[in-house]
Image 1: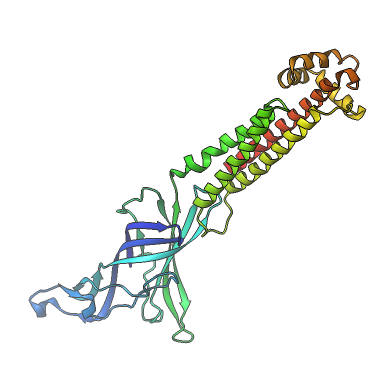
Image 2: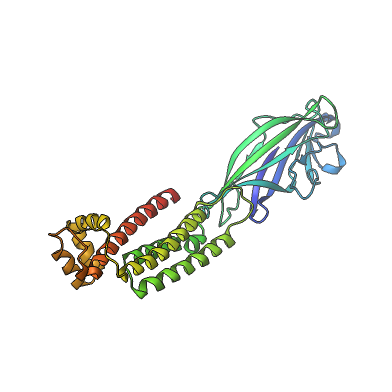
Length: 351
């Protein structure tokens, strides 16, 4: 028996692969042979499958809508008792879906065909001769289909105790070579990551930073809802992209909390504790610290911070605002570098 795949359609909501095939089935019946010399040299005739004995071959898939055998068709019968038929048949193969790398998900779909009403001694599949061909398959624009494996096995019969019957299992592998979902669910990853890092780049204590933090959380909520709506619920694995968005949502929330906290520190009237002032002063006198103080603080405050570098102290009551701006500057850069590193690691894992 050879299956020639003509067309295939995958139903994501059911996790099923619908296979439209031409079944080329050949068997030998020793009761249907004759000598051509006795019948005017006739070596072959055309007969209907319903007119002769045929092996009752069924689909063994539990999800197949129609538990029926090979449909009736015209066959060629030769004088040596060999019958060759080519009916058409639609099989429904259940699939095991892997959405780990969604939208580039993969699916393994398997169809099982056998003759459960006959024992292995009555109907025997020809190993090495049975299989499936997709040479003339009309390719699907969304899915790339390839043959996984063809297995011959014997299953214990439920009709005759102690006997087995022949079964052929054919698996198909589906993957997406290209999908339009990429621009919908993958592109926002870059945008949201850049927005989150931009929030930490902006000057602490500004209104723009708080507004952008709120808009960033709203953007994450909308994107997560959109991704969750597009992901089918038939798989058993959680997509990496959904984990990425959930983690990014946590970072966006932390960025909002940090922005509020840093704004409160900038406006505080208390003096900077000595155990905080020392490390901050040590950082600000370095070259990266000077760059941070020039880009994230007011110019006058940065100048006062540089004037205080020789004293290595940020507890002068006349420069409380400048001192706290230095602390906020260092904290903001620490969060920025940490978040940037984590985003890079997450992108590497996602890809």
